[in-house]
Image (cartoon, rainbow, N blue to C red):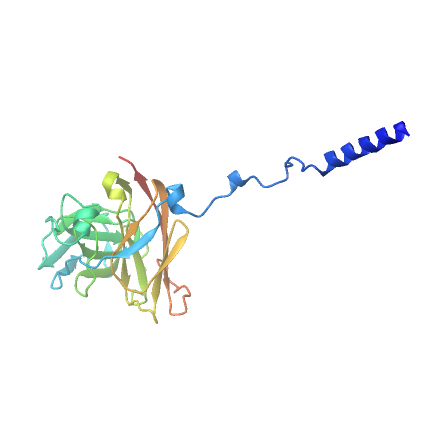
Length: 272
């Protein structure tokens, strides 16, 4: 009888041990790997695209490109660009508008953006200059720019043409189709200039509307649909490398064919 009682007690102890919760196994989820989407608790900035509403218009500014001529075939690689600028002063600071204070600003003042084959623009502060270009066919977009690099977008403040340099075979691109050219952001931003980064592009032969053509800007994987052609400020970019992709879309948000209508660039933001 005594042995029976001891056996029963041992069985009870064994059952009690088996009913005690087990320690977590290696297969259970480690909550330290779960990222909570809370920008405040993580210290991550919210990525925003804010339209510029207060830029000076310069509505009567005019840019005319005299040389090189449309369709020119130039034997020399030293290409002279000669512009006539009216009602706009190059090499003068743009002092009006919030971006004049909060965005990266050229200390050389207002200028021309010259974009060749949709490569990163060259800033030109004089109405006449000579550039040495490799042999090739060129589509050249020129437009007036505020000193903080926002384009002036009205008709008459830009020029789009093509020419051939050196031994390259002359070509004839159709410049009457809808075209998208990338302008800003560009290069490296330091210190206070990292807080507000200008996004700007230039359009030819098209407008934007909610029920019409659009531009999709994808910034570090986050997409924004733009239906109003103006400058925008990107807020919340992290330090380091960021990627900006622009696409010209039709009313159904389908890509519009064109050699420059999809473009992707990278920029760098550094603390100092």
